[in-house]
Image (tube, rainbow, N blue to C red; front, side, top):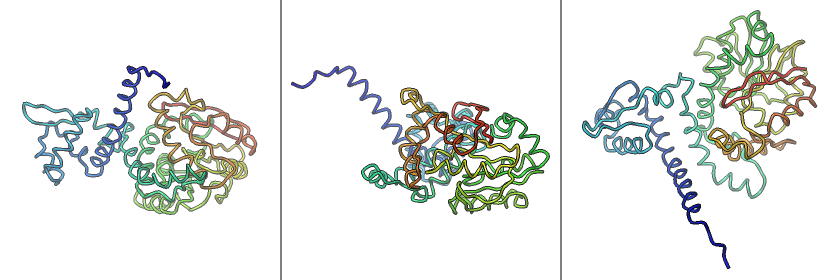
Length: 354
């Protein structure tokens, strides 16, 4: 005989799944709103009719009206029936319409464009044990990742994380050479370069399209004389005598983080430091039962782990392997000083040295 189910618990879980599926569908609407500038057009504009918003964005009014209905249902936008107007509050605009705000979170939805498009490759990877490399995804992923992480770096890197490393800010102010490994679009590199004009910065990433974007950004910001970007792997980037080597949310993506640490141990100047930033996720599954933990573990299962497996190195950590694992790998590579320097809701920052 089959088990007798607790129907209340079945319905409770079904409701949770329906909430998640609704959020998944709504995420596409959010991505559309970001790409078409709908949130930006509503920011600070006060109450707007669908006709007003269509005129501001030069979009079809019928589609805009339908999009607004989805935003009201998700409580992203407020609706006033008496005037048939829609309002994006200033607080919501800080999350969806202002790329300069520390709370800007739209990049996550841009990432999803590419990850959903990679579903067939991910299904195959789960069956075969092979990987799905970073370069196998579409350009929306690279754009989304850079957009997602930049606000947090802009808010904390110069003001909190670097000062948490003993002696590093003083060295940057005097002038030192810095390697930013896994730099992507170069947002972290350029933030440091603007803050410390006496130092030189070198960004390295194995992904050519990202390096090309970083180079353009350096030119546009007038920093190309002190900032260089080169295609190089984390285990064999060029140069040496670096006073600071940084790894922003990238070590767990490597097939061989040990090789990256060994290279850092050789490339550091006497007294130099590594700044390691990793997701604030727990190794124990039960400790990730919260919104941030859920986001990180889901990203790991669809992006971080498959990307590391594709590199065919000795490790495939995922983004929630835990501090102990990375500290052990660093110690074996010759980086034996490991200290938690700062911690936030989404990030843990480590001061790592020989």
